[in-house]
Length: 115
Image (tube, rainbow, N blue to C red):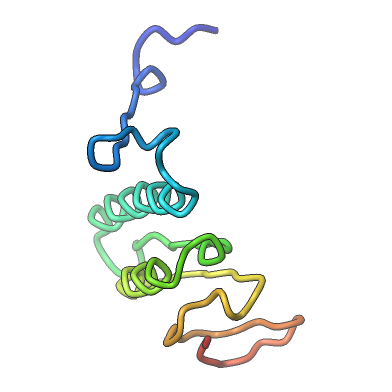
């Protein structure tokens, strides 16, 4: 089929300063832009939720591995307002310090702080 109009035809232009992100952004900047867009969508869903029970669940699947230390810390502090967050990481050292939660390690459920 062919889409002549509607959201499938929208073109989104992302820039870093005056430069187009495509072809200019570093790997970390590209990840940051993608995360920012996902978090913006999550913010919209959260704003529409009436109660804590209706809040969307935020899932971050191994995203910290692709970010530098500063971006990891900023993302960790940003998601603390979420009612429920599921974060996966293949390597413990990818998780920012001070992140608290329940840790599952080799099928064992542990209460811990990631560090």
